[in-house]
Image 1 (cartoon, rainbow, N blue to C red):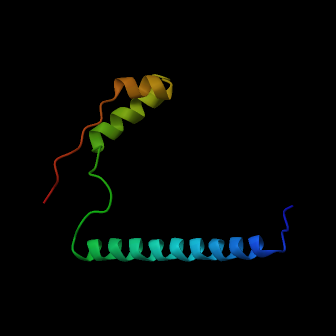
Image 2 (image 1 turned 30 degrees about the horizontal axis):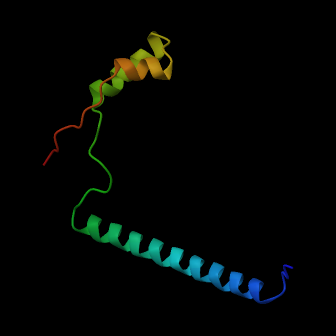
Length: 85
């Protein structure tokens, strides 16, 4: 028989607190790593996938051609841009 006030509840509470503490630790380390990377001039995330012309084309396809998102994606090619120094 399960006793929610017994040893199982105490163990569950302990494990839940440990998991929450671990999650906070991981989050703190992630933010710290991102801040360090930014200070070193590194970009967080991927390279830009669109320039002004690509965005204008996407907006035109969306507005003028009344395409669904799936149709729009089939007509639009997204390629990484060359990094600018």
